[in-house]
Amino acid sequence: MPFGSAQGPISTRPSAPLRDRLTHEQMRIYGIKNCDTVKKALTHLDTNGIAYEFHDYKKLGIEASKIKNWAKKFPLEKLINKKGPTYRKLSDEDKNNLEKISTAIPVMIANTSVIKRPILEVNDKIILGYDENEYYSLK
Image 1 (tube, rainbow, N blue to C red):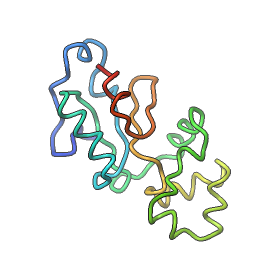
Image 2: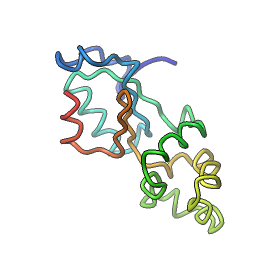
Image 3: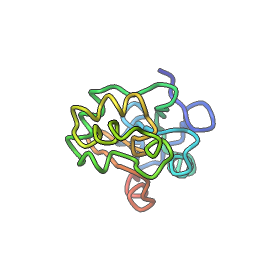
């Protein structure tokens, strides 16, 4: 899988403190390229010279094991994006299925826009959503 930034090839300018701790293989951000919040997060990483791999849900999908791993760290309701049009368009059955991890995973795989974004993985740390201060702590 090629590494890249929102604008193209990999961002290869990690900041000095980060360069000593991380490589782009260890930092991965999940989301949808056209999402405004994802754009802010990617801009922050690019502006600060932090290398990462971008995983676009729309193009690459998402594996059940990844969702299960996130659900170990965050309550399911935090992983679901209920503000977007995709959630509003779901059937009542699918919305009800999002209440339990075993039934939520297939809905999330089929409708990746209902997954909160961005999700940033840095080694064993997972950051849900974009918080500028939390991203600054990556340096």
